[in-house]
Image (cartoon, rainbow, N blue to C red; front, side, top):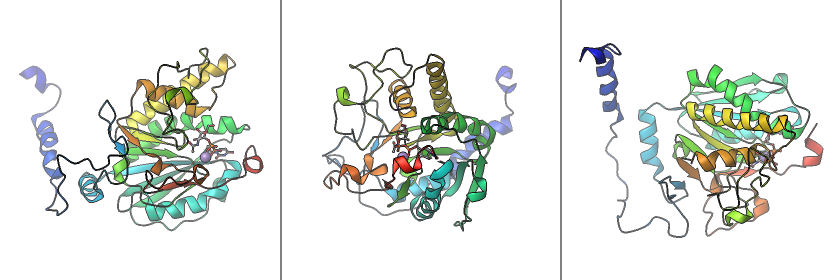
Length: 313
Ligand SMILES: CC(=O)N[C@H]1[C@@H](OP(=O)(O)OP(=O)(O)OC[C@H]2O[C@@H](n3ccc(=O)[nH]c3=O)[C@H](O)[C@@H]2O)O[C@H](CO)[C@H](O)[C@@H]1O
Ligand SMILES: [Mn+2]
């Protein structure tokens, strides 16, 4: 027994074990979950590896809020405002204040090459905005791909000391409904709004076998969007590090995957399956229409942009 006590004192072990007591919920009243009734019968709500797929109607926000509150969870939301994209920042943060993780602790991490152009925000209590100054790459493809490297570095330098979870999203977006702790898990991917109903053959995976992002035609679960992923800090550190390394290997061989970071992310998720998957409610584009039967909510919406006018500027 002495061997075990070398590692941690009895007191440290006791403290660790006793912590579980904090996770007791208060008395709550809500509709009983019915064992013989599916909450949604029109969509897949669980993957074959037992990861929930988050759709409206499948979860009770009150229970989840109590659970994450009792853990005093803190969430980091990373966004990139490089060059002209800084114009999206104001509305992005304003709508995040209304809808993103309301009632929980939030750090906005704004990566930008224009720190002087970041507007002043008045944030709700428990929320703060941190500016991380980075370089703005010339090509827009490099701007989007280098997010992996920058998030990887910041995970080690900053995030690990400040937050429990990281959520990484596109900036040319606005929140239009609640996005809360129901999205939190170890490793989180989001169904791309353009492909959630497609067969794997139609997914725009990288199909050239020379690329690190290559996925053969007979593999693939879902087509995940580059614009919304997350997880624990340790997992996001791994994910972004591995995606960045794959991109650098390809760059050295003079190849770039079809959809840039999104292609490498899809490869990563094929062999590191997400522990939770977000439905397209969490990343919608009105260019895809409004299939109301399936899509009960639009929570995070693409803001129309003139790519030609804004990219590479
Ligand atoms: C919704 C969604 O899934 N979007 C993905 C999609 O393209 P998108 O066409 O949505 O890419 P995008 O132009 O929004 O670029 C991605 C993000 O990079 C940042 N940015 C980009 C250019 C720039 O000059 N300044 C700047 O700050 C900004 O935060 C932007 O939101 O495919 C990209 C790769 O091709 C990425 O995987 C995106 O995440
Ligand atoms: Mn975008």
